[in-house]
Structures are given as structure tokens and as C-alpha cells.
Amino acid sequence: MAKHIVIIASDFKGVEFIEECHYAGWHVTLVTRRKLFDSPWPWTAINDTKMVDDEALPVDYVRAATNVCGEHAVDKVVGLDEFDVITAAMTREHLQIPGLRSSYLRRFRDKLSMRNLAANSGIPCPEYIGVFNSSEIADFLEKVPAPWIVKPRHEVSAFGIRKCTTSGEVWDVLNELDARNTWRDHPSQFLIERFVEGRVYHVDSVVDKGKVVAAGVSQYGTTPFNVSHHGGVFTSFIVPYRAKERKELETLNRALLMAFEYERGVSHAEFLQSSETGEFFLLEVACRVGGAYIANVLEIACNFNLWREWAKLEIADADHPYKLPKQRRDFAGVALALANTEWPDTSHYTDEEIAYRITKERHVGMIFHSTKAKRIEELLEQYSQRIGEDFLEIAPVKERHDD
Image (tube, rainbow, N blue to C red; front, side):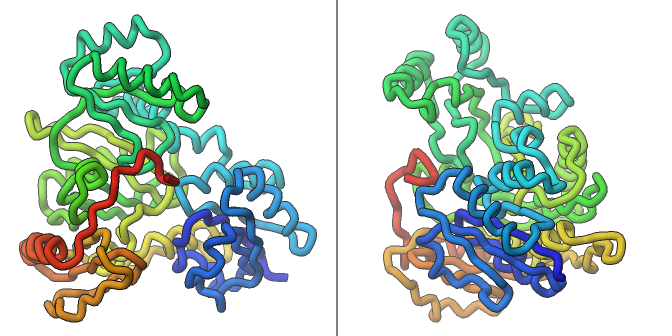
């Protein structure tokens, strides 16, 4: 009987992961939300599906995956989205299936735990404090210069981040959160850290046997915080291979993943370079594929797809060891934005470097490919302006990912 993998996906993503498991001969069961059932999943690569309610809690996914066992024994459980990682771990624990445990994975989900582990391992972080003791918070605000940000410990991207320029603003935010009288919004679910102005980079890695075997180093054009809070066109592009910043980030990323004792899988780490000092600080790290079509950018530029490599790592065994494809060192970048029309027509964008057009409702974007870094930067600058003029929609700031 074929080996069986249960894939938990609370968002539509990971098509390549699913396909790779199917190509390797695994029986694939997809557990997803009811409203995602009509999404263009790779149905020919899926053997079975289980639906949960749109408002399902982690325990509902665990129950759905457990019910699958009655029909076909489960060998692997994987969660594709940031919010599925611990749900999948809870499922593995319940079914007593090998794999990373929820207690370990919280270091990748809880930004305070993440900060503590990284800082104690010598990884630079902006000065920070957990929101527990008012006297300690007051001391922090007195000693650490403004501005500061109040950041959710468990959110993704820049959702829910508040920038404060005075200590009074910080206390106002904390009091407002406390007045909501919900555990999700309790002030202790946040941390306070010094706001550092600078450029944001991300390092996306493939890790096998505790070693980074492939990594893409990229820079955001406009920081995710600014895009989230002020709107605009999101861009990200490959950093030149001989750049000093790239070497520093590769070294820092290896040290980070070693400190986190990460043995196998993929990771997405974000680092901030201070515009004042040039020093790099950790922003966050996750053990999953980064969003915003980063996997596609790396596949076009470097010849490895993070979704496919993650799947290969998960299903590898002694008879089928993991093997990384031969890499290349081209350049690519993505421009992506919310669109003011349901399905934007970009046929009038005709540059030969357009390697991929993003097809997603109410979104507009494309990925560019070139052998020259300078050309990618030029195209992203041009298309940020063109997309802004032709299609850009600016949505209200969301406090949470699920608002």
C-alpha cells in the first residue's frame, strides 16, 4: 500500500508540494476549509479530501485528520500555512506520528520566544521587552529611544503592528488592548521593541541534516510594514551574488537556524539592516515557505522551488534520499499589488523579461527574469509606477490576517 501523507491547508497554497508527493507515489489527503474547496487545487494529484468549517479551530483539523486514519493509516502530516504548522504538529502528537512537536515549533510562531532564543544565541535583535510588568515596561521606554513598535507575538507579516513616538502612545495602545477584554488581544500577547529604520531582506532556505543546502537572499523594495500600512506595490528581488550584504546575511541565517536547532525543511527569515549603522537585526523566522510568490522568484532565478524541495525532504527515506537540483545564479524579482478590478488585464505589459504573470482575483503582478541584477531593479521601478497608475487599489489597514 502506498505511503499516506495528510496535508493541512487553511489557505490556498502549496500546489507544487502536493504535486511532488503525488509524483513520488504517495497517497495524498488534503484537509482544508469549506470555502477553499473550489480553489484550483491540483486535483489529479489528490486522492482524498476532508473539509472543515471556515471557522474551524486547530482541534477540528486534528479530528478530521484522525478520522482519515480509519480508512488509510497515516505516515506523515504536514501543515502548509503559517497557521497550520502547529496544527499539524498537534495532529502528529495525537496520532503519535514522528515529526516536529508543537512545543519546539512555538519558537517559530511566538515572536517573543523567537527573540529570546535568538538574542541568547548571539543573534542581534532590536531592543525588546515582553508586555508583562508595568515597571519594567516603564524602565524600557525610558532607556530605549523612541520610536517603538507594539507588535503581536503570533501574527504574520505586518498585521497589527502599531508604531508609537511617545511613551504615552505606547500606554494608550496597551490600555486599549486591555479594554477589549479578550485573550487574543490581551497586552501580554504583544511585545514592544525599538523601531529601526532601514532596509528589509529575507533569506529563504532549504535545510537538510541541519545544514543550509540552498538559500535565496532577497531584498524588499518597500518594507512590508509600509506596504501594509500605507499601500503601494510590493516588490522583492534577488540580491547580487557577490554583494557584501549577501555574504553577511548567509552567515547570519546559518547561525540563526543552528541556534534554533532546525534539522530539515524550509525556512523564511527576515532581517533588517539599520540605515544608521548598517547592522543587521533579526525581524522574524518561520519554518515554512514565504508568501508573495517568493518560491516562484527563486525557481526562476535559482532553479529550486521551495515547495517542491520541502515536499522532497518530507518524503525522503533511506531508499529515496533527498537530492537538491543543480542551481543557477540568475536574477528575478516580483511586483505585486491589490488591483482595482477583479481580473486585471496586463496584456499591454510586453517586456521580454516577464517570466510569470500572477493570476489571482483582485491582484496584479508579475515576476521578471534576467541575467543582470540591474535590469531587474529597473523593471521593478518601472512597473511599480505603471501598476500604480493602471491598477492599484489601496485597502484599509487590517489589524489581523483574518479580518
